[in-house]
Amino acid sequence: MRMPIVFPLLGIGLLLSAGCDSSMEPSAPPQVEAELNVPFTLAPGQTAVFAAVDLTLTFDGVVEDTRCPVDVVCLQAGSATMAVHAKQDATAPTALSLTLPQIPDGIPFGAFRVHAVSLTPEQRIDRTIRPGDYRFQIMVDIF
Image 1: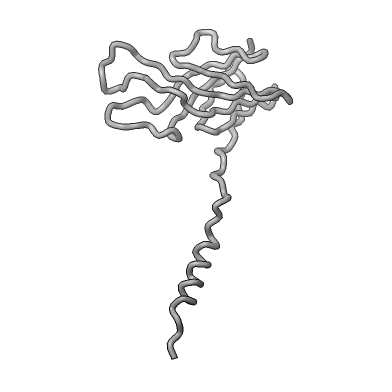
Image 2: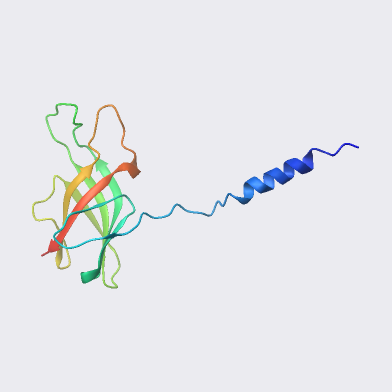
């Protein structure tokens, strides 16, 4: 007696699909414990927590990156603009736009100033930077 091939294939398909959950979202990067006046680095989607002053900063990503590649001679250095959300206490998050080269006094947020320090990796003529590969160094001080 021949067993139909459909049943074993159906069983294998059920086993394979049991391990796949389409509702699973990628986990957020771990939070960074940060201190005032000390530079820290964030990946896109990552949050820095300043526990002493109930402040959080989340790096949303790079909005624009026109920096001159390091392996080319440019007439202008270019710039990079990063999106950050800042939140203190129970207030709603505030969108901030930070640019490199930075504004000398930083961007004000409440009693604080948020400074863009650096953005890596550097641009190169022979590669494209994927959004998740960026790392943004920031510093926060009191206004």
